[in-house]
Image 1 (tube, rainbow, N blue to C red):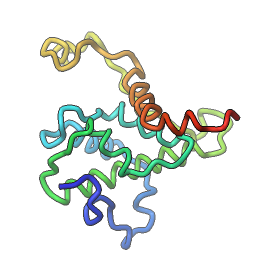
Image 2: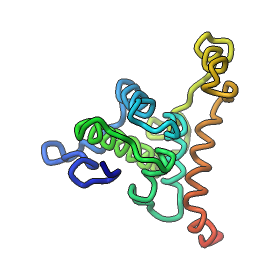
Image 3: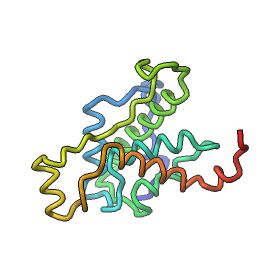
Image 4: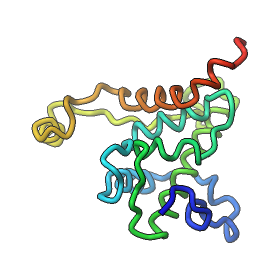
Length: 173
């Protein structure tokens, strides 16, 4: 299955033209996080926090970056083995909704960070003493507990690297 097969990559908006504009709920974030960690996703797939930083970095890029150029990077340039078209469609719908949510927030005319229109990054506050974190380090799943915002920043910098030619040719202002 290809990344951006037109019949599965974009959700149908015929029934609800605002479907891609709805912000992600906590349940949506849970589903997206589970999909990124699913068995069908390559081990090199970004986690949810890194994906959020990556999408924010793409929104900040000097020019629009099409999904065909950035979706492979989400999966570490490997191809996911979606179990079915419905799963793929759900993944891309959630991805596009979060991308649109970030773009709307970063382009909103906000003057204060407590403005409800302001961008709120998805950050995981790791408790290095938690049993889960200790198990992940002990099992070698992660080399150490990441610092607050570290994975988000890695994702953002990955987007900057992906669009480096655009950044190098951008006007200085």
